[in-house]
Image (tube, rainbow, N blue to C red; front, side, top):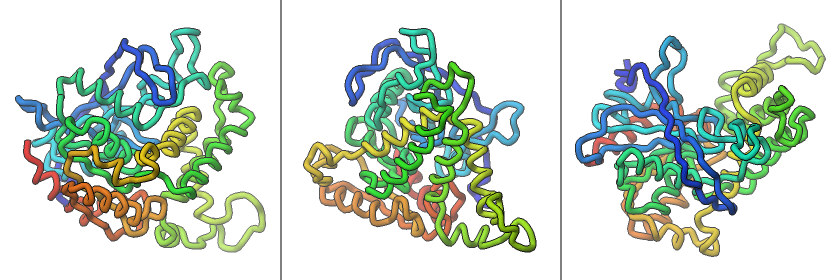
Amino acid sequence: MSTENQGSVGIVSAQTAHFSEPLPLRAGGSLPAYDLVYETYGTLNADRSNAVLVCHALSGSHHVAGLYEGKPKSAGWWDNLVGPGKPLDTDKFFVIGVNNLGGCFGSTGPMSLNPATGKPWGAAFPFVTVEDWVDSHARLMDRLGIQQLAAVLGGSLGGMQALAWTLRYPERVRHGMVIAAAPKLSTENIAFNEVARQAILTDPEFHGGNFYERGVVPVRGLRLARMIGHITYLSDDAMNDKFGRKLRHDTPQYHFDVEFEIESYLRYQGDKFAGFFDANTYLLTTKALDYFDPAWEYGGDLEAALARASADFFVASFSTDWRFSPKRSQELVFALLHNGRRVSYAEIDSEAGHDSFLLDNPQYHAAMRAYFKNIEV
């Protein structure tokens, strides 16, 4: 059995922190009183120096590790990485996972009641950005009495949040860990996000984002959005190895229903996603991805933008990740090195594409384990 599966954090439960002070937003205005849902694993040490914040990706949540009572199939989305004896060892670190504002897993978002109307926020929920999420996380750290984090860690969109932490609160982060991410989205990535959003926005059941009051869900739009996204998370080799051109039947049926196994898989993923995720959250989160660009205010000069950072960095990419390719991680690494930062970089050989950062890859986990072992607490 691999060392990554040695232990689990066991049964966990979510907690809620309420904030009554409005949160100023990058897009203008502010969000009034709001809640953040979070989970913690491990024990905070006496001098509060062993805290690690884990930031989630697009469809992730605060439930990073462990199981919920009575739900044996409820393992956290990064359960293979976080726990006693695992690369992010909860015998050493106090780990925190937070559901971002605008989310649909308990933190204040479009599904929450707008105090001004007594109805769900829906389309009236304000735009939130990566920087806004980081600011709200910082308030939660204040609430928990954590002035400096040993590390901020995230993959994909979570990696962008980790990078933003090192820029907005450089004195509060000792290590920034950016996995399968980029300093900004490519044009192609923005294009994929727009097609996915249009699938939702043009669904007749979307009703301008106020579908809650009508008791409906824009299922068709969510299904298509997830199918589009899922294609980009996998590599060509991964899809070919898993599905190839396998037919559902022995011979072609010549119809427009499911014919190939890959079609069945994508429809299954789309249906599953539409059953638990919120359409407005999807729109908000993909737009936050699109807008993130620390170099924007520096005329596109990434090196100048990263000059504020004082943390050490761990950056990892995956060979077949074409959505956030190794070239994008190297762009970040070079800009950090030009600023005199200490950077560890790992390019992991994997056939799984962008989803590699979620999987139990021995080379990847060994690199993570080694880095965490060298973090002093």
